[in-house]
Length: 131
Image (cartoon, rainbow, N blue to C red; front, side, top):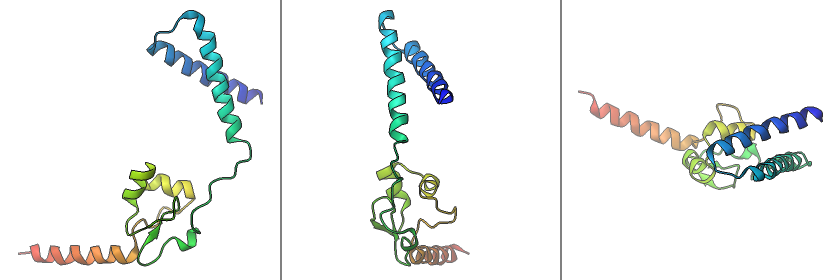
């Protein structure tokens, strides 16, 4: 616990220094600011360790990939391509999404049939462009 207290003090100091360097604050208000920052950090730390279970996926991971669609583990919606939905709704990159849910790096974000269809279209179009 002393290590956590020491780390909280260091983070509190860094945040306070940054805040004071970029904002105008009366000297007599600095101790209150320090206390508020420390208590906020300690509260966040306590909230993060109170036994809250990690979020469960909306559907079992094994059932999230089908030939025609991918099911988002965040909200259970079905998509042909998941990348845009993750960025727009959750501000997640594919790497962050995979890490959050413990997915392998080759976990698909595009439905297999849709990817095959787009590949056929691309190949057909590139053949037309050849002289």
